[in-house]
Image 1 (tube, rainbow, N blue to C red):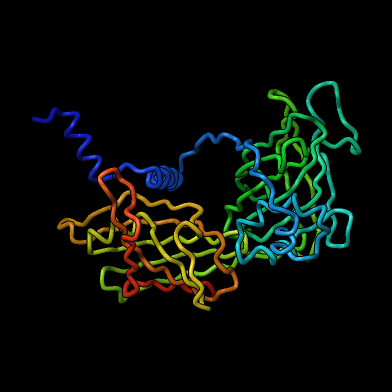
Image 2: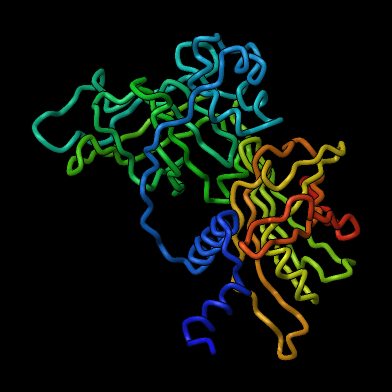
Length: 356
């Protein structure tokens, strides 16, 4: 006879099979739920060093020939994650010292403490910038060995979220900074000028407000669209919102599903993505994050509603459509996916319009 602990463990196992792959998705779902509830979480800065850089020859193939080979390693890791969009993104990077744009460093407030720096001794210098309405990337060379940025980065006055600051290569002194644009209004605003304001820490207890401005005609906007999908045998998408840019595609789906097995399958986001040309990406190739809200049931438990948020990388941002094809997989007693058990449900494919 099982004790209470064993009964609880068995119930949890049925709901959330324990696998390393699924654990990551569960964490992502919890993060999404907290964001939807408006809670603020304390984020640890990702200071881990990047993996070994791609060989120069590979970088040349990936990014094209618009940047000298000596500069490519600075961007190679980030570009390699963009897949088919890498060349387009590389061509949109604004480089200081050439004719692609102007980067102006402007100190907003003098550093705290007796050691106030002149403009030529700025807290950091921005060497390169990328902006597409969805993501701001900038590469910085700090004046101090200690270099941290505040979680909130303001772009043209709009509060945006710092994702990470990481040294591009150990000892290089060049830091890659990624910022996610949170405002839909800012995402779709066409501009040739961005003003960036951020708090800079040159010591754990020493903070300064700092800003820089970038002027360039290379900036893009994130394409926005909304819609709905009906006529599915298992349910419908009551509404969806999608933001499309070379750096990322963010898709929010508001589901209404009548098949409980499909609910569980859809929540894991095991989709194959297909662009308008027929090119497909597997789950492991496109998934950056997948979060779902807690499912809600009607009185008869005949209908389940939940919201799913997908962040997608590597999908062709120029494609007018995206087809999501659910995949059913089988799991063994240890919670690991059984190789070769994937069942692609072509008949349940869902088409999302990426352009109005």
